[in-house]
Image (cartoon, rainbow, N blue to C red; front, side, top):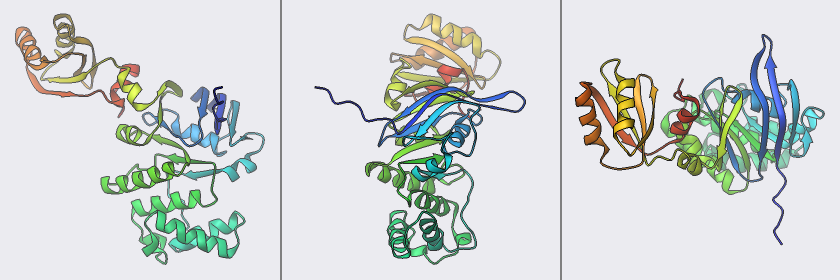
Length: 319
């Protein structure tokens, strides 16, 4: 007898948000997030990621549709929903008049903890996010990465069923980003359910169990990072930059003359070609010579989540 899968912690049905001016930020979103997984929303700025999190965390009122978080209807019972969620927003919302420890302690008290319990959990979480030595420091003295880790600690202090991270590493230096990744991965290992929005491919690839690629308010694809990359059908991605306006002509000729080349797209004026074979570079250079096209840069890489995004939308994830 096959065991039934656990009920989704987050479930939406045709969830939509239209802003004044008929700006459709999220369109008929159907989403199901499993307990204990990191679910990533990957897409460019303006894709609808933050609006989605805004609706699921009760900060944005949906125009239509349904949504439940932790079994709570967020539209009918927003106050109750706030008790089962933890949120790390894009902006720093720490109380700058308090110390690092006080930010956690008073958050715990707000959620009904006794003074003793709040102190105990504060100490535990400051150790978890590597800020125990900063307990008495003013929040203003924290770096951006430290402040972000403190907001994660605050968000999980009341033991939420799901943690929402909205672009958690935007603006952080690489070292701070990796430090936060380690903490998020530890929370995942402990069974925390996390919804993460990001426009960093490597972040989604590194952290997420499943990734939903989103653009213009719609989820275009959903799967594990590995299966999404496999869906391109390419063993290699070749990027070819020319010194003129001949990129499209070169791309067409390469697909026609090289059996291993499956298709190509023009991205930022460069040819992005999918290929399933080897020995590509000499044939690419020979084809360019035949067409009298000067190549200024040539690189070969494995398929990435950005490759998947480009295949789905025809544009670069950074746009």
